[in-house]
Length: 376
Image 1: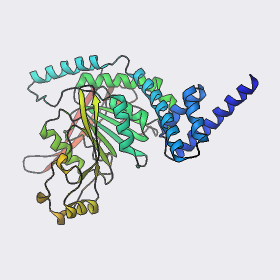
Image 2: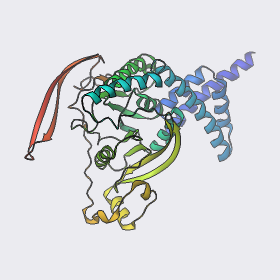
Image 3: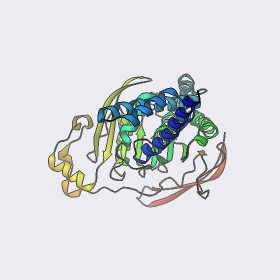
Image 4: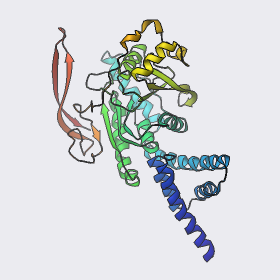
C-alpha cells in the first residue's frame, strides 16, 4: 500500500510539471492548464492515465492519441464547470426571456427579425474556439456580438487565453441573466484561474455608434438569423480589424474580400445544424495578392465579386485602441489596475456618462453625451 501511495504521488508530481510544460509549449491554454491541475490534484483516474500515456509515448502517433485523451478529459471538466454556471439559466428560460423582450420591442415598432434566439452547443463551440485560436498568440480582446445569457462568452473564458472578454446584447432580460451568471462565475470559477480575465457585459445595439469592436482579436456572431443589412454592417466593421484578427459566423459567411474564410464545418446547435465560418482579416499585401490571384477557396460561400474591387486602393484602416471606453458596461469584473473608468465593481448599480461621436446631417462631427444610471 505504501509503494502504491508513492507511485501516485510521483505521478501527480510529474503531471503537474507536465501541465506547465504543455502550457509553455502552447499545447494547452491557461484555463485548460488550470482544469488539468484540478483533475491531477483530485487524482482523477482518466487524467492520470492519459498523462502517463503521454509521458511514456515514444512515437508521434502515441503522443497524439494520448494528447487527445487528455484534452478530452479537460474538456469534460470545462463542460462540468460551464454547466454549473448555467444551472439556473437554461435554454427554456432564455427563450422565455427573449420572447418577452422581443414582444416589447415589437410594440415599440422595432424590427426584431434578427433577434431569434439560439444557443451554441458546448462541444461544437469548444472545437470552434480551439480552431479559431490555433496559431494565434494570447488574445487581447474577444467579442460576442449578441451575447444572450453569456454562454459563448463564458465558454470562451474557460477555453482560450485572452485578457478581456466582451459581450454585447440588445435584449435587456437576456443581458440581466448574463450579469447573474457573471456573479456566479466570480464566486465559483474565477478563483480557480491563475490569470483571471476582465469580463465586460453591455446592454445595447451592436450597430450603435458607441459600440466599435474593431479592436478585437477574435469576434463571434451567432448570425444564423441575422438580416442581410446587419450582416453587411458586421462585415464593414470587420474590415477594420487588425490583420490576422479572426471573426466567427454561423450559417452565413461575410461578404468581403478583406476577410478570407480559413475554416468551414457543419455542427449541430440548439436550433439544428449550422455551418461555422472562421474568417481572417487580411493585411494589405494579402489583400492585393487575393485580388491578383482572383480566386480562393470559399469565394462562393462569401459571395465576393472581384470586379468590384480596386487593386490599387488596397487600404485597410484598422483600430488598435480601446474603442469602447466611452460606453460603460452594466457588468464588469474588476480590472487588474483598478483605474479603468469603465469598470464598476457592483454589477447591478452604476452611474456615469457615456460619450460618442456621430456625424450630423451636414457631415459635421458632433459629440453626444448621455448620463445614465443602471439599476437591476
